[in-house]
Image (cartoon, rainbow, N blue to C red):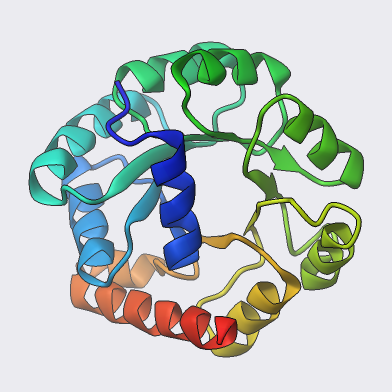
Length: 223
């Protein structure tokens, strides 16, 4: 069962403004990355369902996080069907994210009062997802569907929207400032926050430092 309720999840997304997105087949690597982000001030983390037996990795990591990073809200991304969503909810996922919008996943998540953030690329998709109970919609791939200007223009008619953007987000001041000023609830960052060479070198302090830096830019942009 999810340890954090829907309000807590959305509040944490809004408070920090950043959700790291990461997958690795080695659970120990994932634990170190989560801890590095946690030490950097991050409180929401998306484990991506990208490889074979990924659910087994998440199961081990999530149990470890509960004991060692008690304030970290763990969710799972790259969920495209209701069966996968149900599997991860059973393993304690606090939120579900997908690259696409699948109404059948809404039903699974709504039954457990767990947030589902589907990937949307148009005003209609965002609006339809909201009608199905998706409190936070993910614009993906954000850099390809129009960037910050797309979000800004969507927020004009749909000003109540909570938009998370993933794809085309970088942990530098200009990029983060543009997204925040456009009106996003939070940004999702993966490869640019976790360069392969940094992970390979097990330079966890570099990840912590980058999280601190990025959160600082977000806070500054919000004024």
